[in-house]
Length: 313
Length: 177
Image (cartoon, rainbow over all chains, first blue to last red; front, side, top):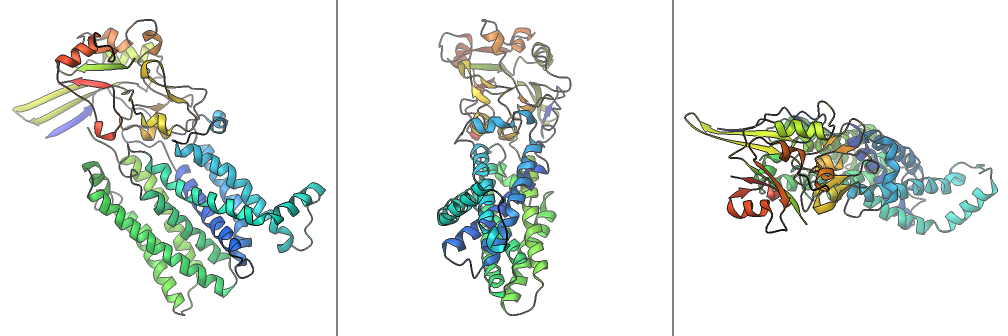
């Protein structure tokens, strides 16, 4: 029998007995940031492909949510800081080694971009809209002229935002559950899937819904593959990662992960989408909400379980 | 220059004098600590083995906390000592999550705090508070780049281990076994 005890009574708040420095703010931010990244990615993609007439919800309507999502995310990030008055220090430096640094900068790029993007569609979506100030009208004309360039920047920064939410966690080699490069693509796939779910919800046009059902189905397939792959990787890795995998394979996170993320968040919506594509009438609200709740649970579970996984020495 | 510490687990009795000295010297807020004692009990009676370790920040040469810090508040200072600049720290917790030794904690004032190897004493040529008070003289502090320093001599003579070197941090606490 071997036991290791901290006998000097170390009980640092938020660190002992297990790390719990990050609470609801971080997973909430990872989720809303992911949804916004997904929406903006599809908006930029279908605009670049010249399909804005066919897919108006994706290109024009759904992006209206993104500034709010990003602001909620930024607000959550701010609430998470312990030294709030110094938050501006983030924007005095760019540290490429730190995912959190370039994530902060990506948010600084994509949040104004999302506002500009929806502003360029205002007149089209709301006839009679007037910008009140002449310079705003001039800016609008200018941005509409360079909308394709805007879409390209948005496409790339949306991918960075989606990937970064995963890489943020995978950069921490001290937490074996997070320390897998699968997390970047997994969170990216999840953000595309949840973004597609929002677009499905907002779409009034059948062909657009079918398209995003298909995209969502594909993303769910990728997510399932990545999840299986992640656990295979863990089980074939070092003892600490085997222990991390066992948190989900019999450990405390087993039920909540497999029921809420895999069954309710991935398998059930996939089944409903397959039925829909086969021609059955499935209420879109059910499918989309399941996908969104599954994505939210995935972020929460990964953030909380990751903090509980550790090296033992 | 590369500051490091060696802890003689054969001499340490786990009195926690170092812990209290550190709290006093560095005005660590009540309920927090920058260093701690770990007691390892191995085996079943009557075949028992015990190891006592005085642990703190490892001032790693490849520090994940310095790498993860988004503002550069966590940095390498004099002799490789890893420090946090409070007025640059935003308290995001990235470094706390990145430390495999859980050596950092959020200070009640908001910034992240940790062992400094008592850099203010070291710069004056003194040893860190924990080393200075140790009643069994089981702590050795010094420059491992200097082959004549006491710590270099001890590490040459004795068998030692480091904690979780597999985490890739290249830690600078040496536990003499």
